[in-house]
Image (tube, rainbow, N blue to C red):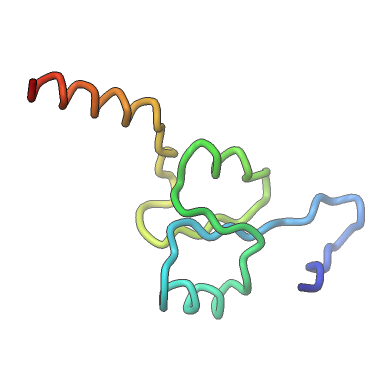
Length: 86
């Protein structure tokens, strides 16, 4: 894949991130935005940490300003569910 041209060499190149895409939605997004530089299965802390100012993040679902998933919070919720079941 050829590097994307930049207006100035001193600028950090903008990366394109796809989040949560599968199947035909991926190919449709690639036609519109070009191929992604990064593919993230979910919008979580790991994906959010990969994004730099100026990067373009394309979500398969959800709002543009959604908060990243927190696995610690999800794990705690599961623990409480199991506690309530027991």
